[in-house]
Amino acid sequence: MLGSDQSIASFKRPQCNLDILCNVMRFLRWKKDLLAMMQTCQSLYRAGVPQLLRMIEVYLLERTTKGPPNLMISFCLFITPDLHLRGSLVHQLKLPEPWDPERYADIIKTFASVVRHLSNLKLFEIDGCESWLHLDDSLLPALSSLQNLKEVRITSRAKQYPNSYNMVQFLQENYSPVEFLNILDFNTATFSVVDVVYPRLKTFLLHLLTIDEIVIEPFLVSLPNLTSLSLGSILGSANGQDINELRRDNIHAQRARKWSQLDIICGEVMALYVLGLQCHVHHLMERGSPLRESSLWMWETVVEDTQPKAITLRVGFCNFDVDDVPLVVPPRARANVTHLQLNLDFNYAEVDIDEAMESTFVLLRSLPLVFLRLGLEWTDFDRQDEVDTDPVPIYINKIDANPEAFVHRIADCVSSLKTFLLTTFVLDSSGTSVWEVSSVDGKVKVEGPRRNHWQVMRSEGMIPLNWFDLQRE
Image 1 (cartoon, rainbow, N blue to C red):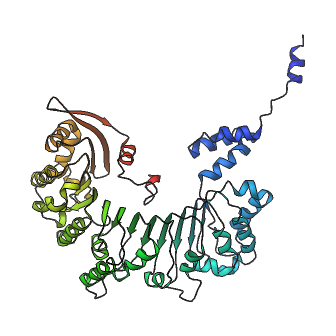
Image 2 (image 1 turned 180 degrees about the vertical axis):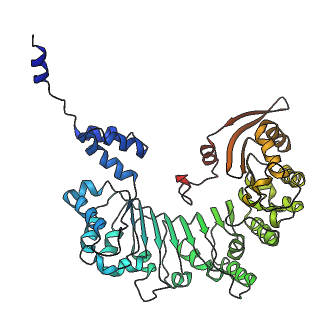
Image 3 (image 1 turned 180 degrees about the horizontal axis):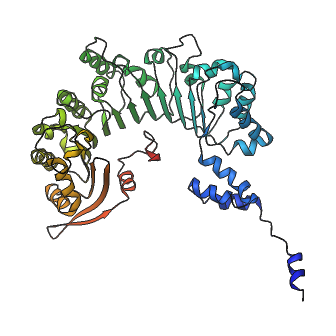
């Protein structure tokens, strides 16, 4: 029998296969847990690198504006020794705008050759794509060769640099199976010149539009299978153009061709009105500032035209008549609405909270809702000294103190309701609770609260995955 000293001397640390360790590390879903494991030993550090690359966005943003692009050089040096293996580990890649393109002259060809081997790249973001694509002809074919690229985010500078490599050419020549396209600073006039069809593209996000750029015809031609469309922030006014004339042109364009249905349409009220959609929409989302009394007529028109099943809307009582709350879902569209997210914004408002809530109950009674998320918001920091005296925060705090009584009142109001989410905001305090509602022997039964509200909302289709980056909440 060996002595203790001999036992220690003869002991050898078992070596575990690196592939096995890599597979074990893939079970770690949170970056902080993965990093903690990687710090324990060299073997786990090596095994954790593949999973870390899958989880993170490789963002090649240089720390200085002068000298060589060290991040891009380091990225190429890391991938190049084993292009096939290491290239397959990168799932998300971002390129910032090259303010000094000449810095990249010596590395761009190498970078393009590396890009060809990013076989599992799912998301690619490029800022100032004209500048990048103008640097070297090999970058676009490299990107076009990727077979698993699903999401592209583009910031175009075509308006500032009209003679540079056009963003539309990038879209035209890219044959990756892209389904999700997110474009900042977009020129629909240029887009419409190129009669190109993108049959795989399902989700299209546009940002920084002017009203006169909301022209539906090029989208109908180029995006025949579109299911989700977002019109981002509107810059300026309609530049003197009649919004009704713009709307009529868009409606007329849909006589020749139109989408039969969209899953989601999102935008500011005026943008949605000008777009003039003449098809059914599953989920209509108002995005931007709270709905005002002055734009209610446009919102009513959009709802009647699209006949949505689900609506997301924010009403601001600072510029809204409490008696008109029932009109946010006009009578001719109420029979279809089964899902509603309604946020009542009381900031800077001088209204009677009881009258506002009673008007809201009138709306809820008129709808065959099975899902309701109701938000009550008072975050008026200019009046935070009044939090204990103003009727609105007092009302909301009373609900927080005894939410079940309020949920019963909602359930009595909406007999078809199955799921109710209550969200409250008072100054910097907020919370959301989930309640299940059912009827037993003619009596309302309420169960809750539960806190997994994001999961509940997703199961009801009220938060589309990969939409406005809500998957990162």
